Image 1 (cartoon, rainbow over the protein chains, first blue to last red):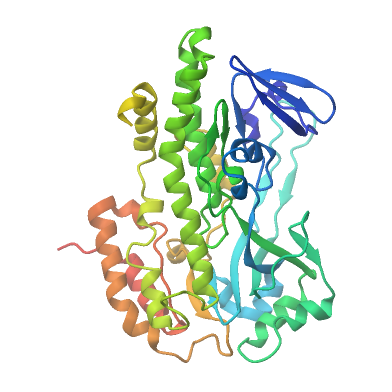
Image 2 (cartoon, chains in turn blue, orange):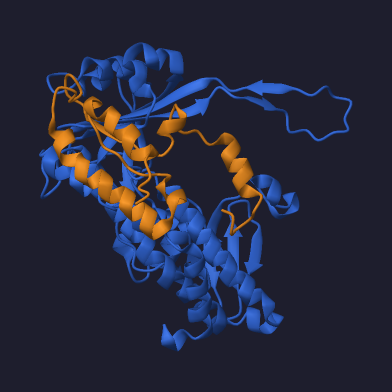
Length: 330
Length: 94
């Protein structure tokens, strides 16, 4: 997908360290000393985001840091043959395994396709082929309520014995212990941005994980980032149609980013709240359903995902553009 | 993705991995238990799921067209495998 982005527009190995908002522009300072000026900053810099800090800290300082979701997981990708030796045809379809304090998520991630080298012809180089082996991905999840001690890292290396101890005892099918034994003993903490009161401040907007980092249990977090990109790119494109002076006007930019926020934030926040609810169901900790599968299952059906999967995203674009042009009616 | 750049989708489809089996592509995930036996011995799923599956298909057909059945969610114990196949590949004509 990066083939669609002009190479000269991308700079790697840059770390933004300061953002200054002036009435006519932004001044961005990078760790290597470079200073850049811009009209707008769109921060897609991940869950631990300096752009998020800039947007939220003045008014909502308690919303800047990622929130630990009282759970972590061990992750692994193994050859499909190894997975089938343990789970047989349970590897065919993506699965959630519900349990007390522990749960699992499994799915296939590669199909063993042979792919042609994308190098365009004519070339003297012989065409080459790459083989992607069949692979199986899984997360073995634990909730413990003990908090997360590490301030800087979202992972924690533990001993093999400590990892295995997490899935000891009754309530766990032995097949999961066999899977666990193949994982690296690294705990991946589950963090999210549960509360976010705005996705923009002045000339600066958030998108992707910096705006709405989510738990993975609806497999929908990345798609929300794509929706951000769609709406925001249309806003920016509309701004760019006006004269240079108008496009750089703080009032016009704020109207555009406010429209983006008003359309995207309710939907993205709802997604991450629902993903957190799925986590509570997976661990039998849901406030109403508890460990009653008879109450859990209906909550995951009956159109739960319709609003997410069958949404009119072009309608969102139209709504945002309309609100940008008539902010008083929003 | 199409709305951002029409060229994205073919590239995405090239690397996208679904479930195994053509008749399993519409399933988002199946739910089972972590405990010994994975819940296969339980019968809760059969009685609970029959109606929701029908509801889900009806919604898909009336609100969004047949294409929207992609991604339909099914939760089952192993005893429901037969139900899944029926639900996914059946369209209500009348």
